[in-house]
Length: 426
Image (cartoon, rainbow, N blue to C red):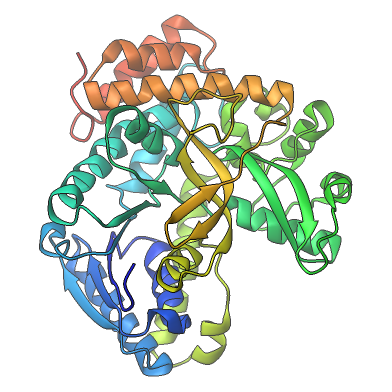
């Protein structure tokens, strides 16, 4: 990637994506002189992000050129990297995804990435991200394409299965887990991680400063995980006690893939959780725009996003460790099918991401992951091919759904509720 690249941020006004990404671009001198194109369908959100960029530029003096667009096709020509974080009516549709299965006795803990909600969510976002990728292929064929849109695993599997266009999925859960265990062990750690997005395991760990292997201490620390900030870990501890897996998430995400999760944790109040997150981020942006935040301290803050080291390595040529990325399974996790996408720790280089290979996942977790890969493949077929059979197969195979008739009812209700955003199934 050239110095002073052109970076397109599609969905720049989304809840956390815009703030953290602009922060990282202004915090790092490697991006000096870059052109940043902000894209959002909402002019008000776009204007707010533009003002935020101006405030950060005044503090950091990076010489970034910021452009604003409401239509992505106007922003893509000449792009070196395109970063996507898009949703339509996110919270309201999520609440529908969560409520419909519960009408039929299906108790689930989150409904965003796995279970019936993961199917519904994917059928809204896979076509959307693929349409963006089609424009990128046409207007910026050499651009690095990075996705933050959920459900990451199902979107990236759809690309692996149906599109000859590489895409990198990024999620911050493994980085957060590394930081969480660093605090528990009172040392900075790196890890080797492998699995599927939101069900990724930390398989080995070492001290970043000394190189000492701290894998045993990592396992010992699971018992000391403490609930807080709306996150619980009782089910995560159960997965460790029962299967020997150090899962790199809290109960909400890990619990999406197991029927037994509700025995250990309660469903979250999604609306309240999303409102709290949006309010917190809005308060930060308001404080910046009002000149009430110490921007020097703000720019020293290190975010959880892997985008910054990936772009930095591409520009500088200096390899950097990345906590995780969602990549095509080119023998990175040989126990899982190659026709899917896995989340693994990786090294960012000038030539792209090199994922770590892992063949030591616990057997029981591997079995759960294999089932989920099959479900993700079926969901991809439903979204891309419009296959109603594939959607129904995915629901019947899902561990969270225990009845064939219930699967049919859930699918029918989802089709009715989301017919304006879903592809037509036949």
